[in-house]
Length: 178
Image (cartoon, rainbow, N blue to C red; front, side, top):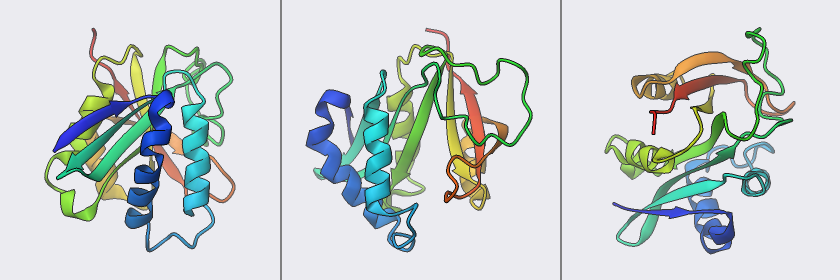
């Protein structure tokens, strides 16, 4: 698998590929408003507008088979809106340098169990300057959460980020010192 890094300036080149992979992976839920391609594209656009946006796309025989993207959480971020779990004071304080939000990580079904997701994940996080990474996992996907936990993530809290979204578990991973 070939991995290619990108940033907000290069999003136009890969946006169609990201949308196609998303539509394939969420084909069984695409009719749900929250999981529609249009809503996903909207969330992708929000991410790309935030400083620190980065993406990695995995290609096999020049076809996209998975990707990950995210951004640095800024002061006033909405990322922690809908957090339902009490946390220590300051645990959700962001300044643009503390936390990288891994917004999406997905691979097509043929690539699951091959290590492709971990390779894409690790490439996205390589050389990140933030002290930690966060991501959200749908509560209804405990196997996915277990996979992330096997990579070193720990549970942080329960989040309902949008009124029409699924319930998520927020996970955290400290980034290695540079």
